[in-house]
Amino acid sequence: MSRPSTADLVAAVPALASYLRPATLLHPYAATPDPRASRIGGPALWPAGEPWPQCTAEHLCDEYRDVSAADRAIWEGIDRAVRERARAGGRAHVVTWAEAAEQERIMDGGDWIDLVGWRTHRTVPERPAAATAMVPLAHLRAEDAPHLPWPEGADRLQVLWCPNDHDGLQGERYYHGPNVGLHWQRAADLAPAAPPAPRRSEDRYLPTPCALRPERLADLPDQDELPEAVHDAAEEFARRHGLEYHRALSCAEGWKAGGWPSWHSTDLVPVDCGCGARMVHLLTVDSGGDPGLSVGRFGELRVFVCPTDLSHPVGLNIQ
Image (cartoon, rainbow, N blue to C red; front, side, top):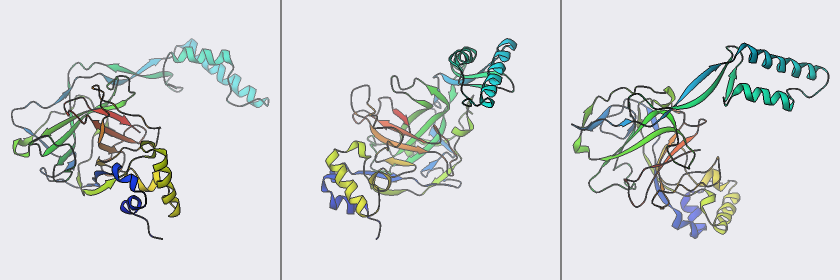
């Protein structure tokens, strides 16, 4: 049995037609990209005379605190007591309430402890002494993704990010990752640029330059975006072909411009703009592959935009 296409599914479940969204899978591959082509990373272009964008938001930094000799002795004593209870036939690796309270006190809000160097670790916000230069992440031509919400006269989208972790960028929406900026521009205004190196960066947020093989397609949403009856019909069609709707026929995976975001790690988390509008998916940044990036726990970073005003702050989510 041949694998059904999106068109086959929509023909069988016509109610899905209104949910189709155009998308472009970017398919990055390691190569020296043409400066004027769509690409990941690579040579910088910027309007002559305009300053290069900088990040002034707080970064999350590593902080280590030494464990005192007295607290080290307490921790080691707890470890010995746990091992002795295990040897005596008790449950292994179980601490008492009192021991757990002591360990929590010693950790003092840290997220892990180094039992060799005897230091606790935590991440703390740091206001940079100087702004950090943003890094080119993606450069997209309008002809490769014409379905994006291009402003009048714009034919290039440059996506820049600060290659550091941030917290609190999204207000009440939890987010832990790079700060992202969108720049809708005209190719005629761009010239070769030499942006300053970021003052501080994490290697996993510095992309290996890649060229792209854009692939246009029609994308269908995650099951959580559909009415129950429509999803049930789509799932039944998928089962008849030995597939699962959410794994095989919706939310195309990988680097993607437009289309729908997947919600494979959580239930649907609507991303709303400060103006109240439901934001739409603009770009998925994937981990691994030739760009060599890692976002979240080797997941996906999704960028959302306001459908009524592109100047509103972007929405960010990691799955």
